[in-house]
Image (cartoon, rainbow, N blue to C red; front, side, top):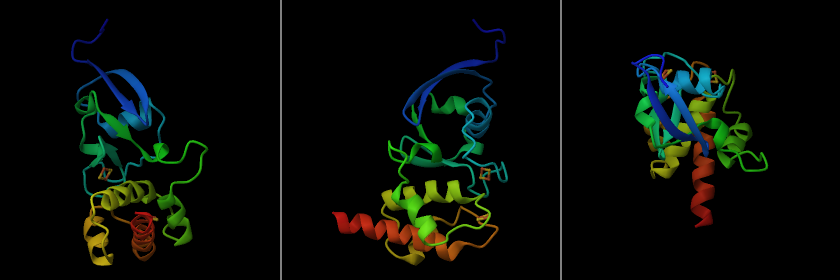
Length: 164
Ligand code: FES
Ligand code: FES
């Protein structure tokens, strides 16, 4: 039973696991992931939708979780950076490509860059470097690791195209 009439019972899947929570409708998906579910891979940068550090996927589409009310993902599938490695813990090819291309310095933006990069590839927006830059333009890297980030997304997109 609720002890606070303003809270809402919510259920969704996070990285394939069912989650049921009672939430204040004002709680962001970012805060719920980090503070309630201890999924701290998703980062809080600006908390205003301007840096992309908090990017996750909801039903396969990328969203900035800081501007997404957690109650809005009821019944949907949320994927965070913790959910993209293989079942044995093998890195996702895009994670490996970030390492191969030295695509990070402090690493704070990296989870968001990877989640956006995955969406960019899945959307068919990784055809060349200009397109990758355009479709990753919502993800800011204060360290300026953009050359490596674009190279990592290009490498992964090319590998996927060659598999087809
Ligand atoms: S923390 Fe969400 S866009 Fe910056
Ligand atoms: S690696 Fe430091 S902000 Fe991008």
